Image (tube, rainbow, N blue to C red):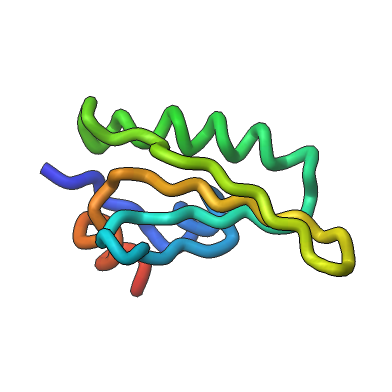
Length: 88
């Protein structure tokens, strides 16, 4: 059984969500550095609700020329499980 999420739930988790080349969900956090830790913890706690096998498999940070930071958290959660909720 899949966890049903609303679009509002997704925006609480990350500022953007998209599938990577492998078809897994990538969550992107932009902006406030203080909020990154809270969002990471929230995502780590959420993923096991889909099943024990789901987790963050890589974390990447990018800083642009304005010194704005974005964090990309790649999971092994299949996009098909999330795309329906993401499009609502």
